[in-house]
Image 1 (cartoon, rainbow over the protein chains, first blue to last red):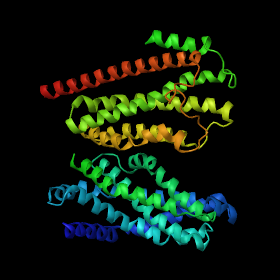
Image 2: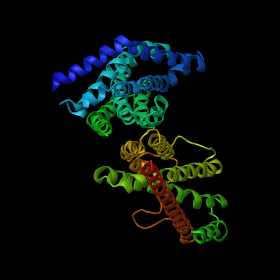
Image 3: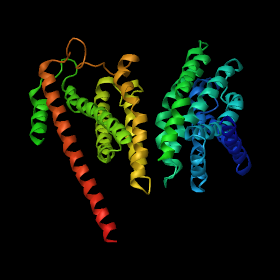
Image 4: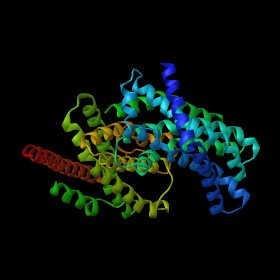
Length: 219
Length: 213
């Protein structure tokens, strides 16, 4: 079963790399939102550093949201999803593999290049490890929660905006703890437990999100 | 229901004493608190019905979830708006980013999200089932709302009715509050019954139309 799941992941990543440079789009969108926020707030470095946690996390949230409807919708329309569900691979496995592929093409590049966005917001280098760690955990969490919502919406007439309406309220805890970790690190305090809390949320979402998504896909 | 509302509003607006600290603003509470109770109770009922509909495939349970959702959304909105009216003179702000307020706001978005999701499919049955999954997932918000005033140090006052050692509220204020809560509950039951009846009639009308061809 593991090779089958890896094959699904490989297929998804290859598709998104070939057909639309999705990875680069999500990353560019992330940097652009950070840039827009910095323009809107003004160039004051102290103020920028003060609002950096909220700005960076909001940008990460929005850029994860951007491609959620692509996880299941495209395969639903051309019938590929029915084939995958009819295969011996359990629906939970398919859902998890597709979500992981989504994270590899959006969350991971965003995490890798987040120090660049951090520099735009005047985040000191000492805080970068906390930022990268919290974003790595947090973006995977965002993909899992959003992926479950996207599975609910697979086959509906309405696309992206409805997914945003469903998903954004559920993103609030991730935003609070992610930005909280960064906030603490910026203030020079111990940020470890906020990151650990994110990791705990991830441990809960890792089995639950594919279960929910599979229940929705089977309908 | 009308009698309960008239009686409750009379008690709340005229017959109950003004608060010694808050003055007449305390009367907002008689509208605000029952609305908050109903907002949570309706969501809890929807979550239970969603589980029943999901596990035993009871057709009425899913229809109940759909019938109750807009009513719950309105109660949540009433709770938020009246809370805001109360917060302006009392806290000096229309809105504070407090755990209780934020979690109720999320509850409102869950209601709206459910309504949007359940209507976005060509096949209504599929929308109902997708919505039921969302309602079950969103139920995690209910304990967060209930205990938000205890887990975090918030501006919103902690529970004063259902607590160890009896209610803290004076009977002269508790009485109108409970009458208003009963009135709200009756309103909900009436509205949800009407909406369920309508949904069943609509379903029957569609079947007749299909049978005639």
